[in-house]
Image 1 (cartoon, rainbow, N blue to C red):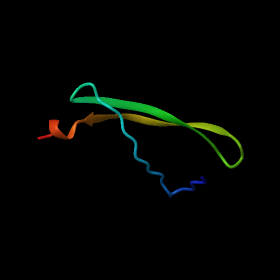
Image 2: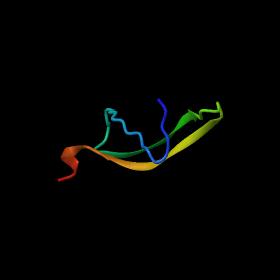
Image 3: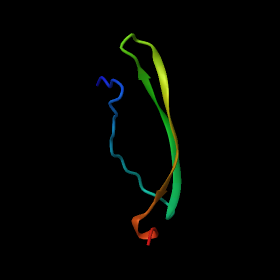
Image 4: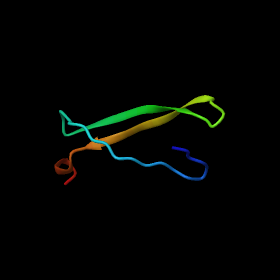
Length: 54
């Protein structure tokens, strides 16, 4: 997939939470059209079970 600015990329994933809430962070390892690698950091964000929000 080729993503050019200002285009964005969005995806959906899931996991089983062992607690009602938590956090996630990470990174994507990407490669430019010129074959130069770079890392796109995903800052920490909150996770919560829907039932824990109300």
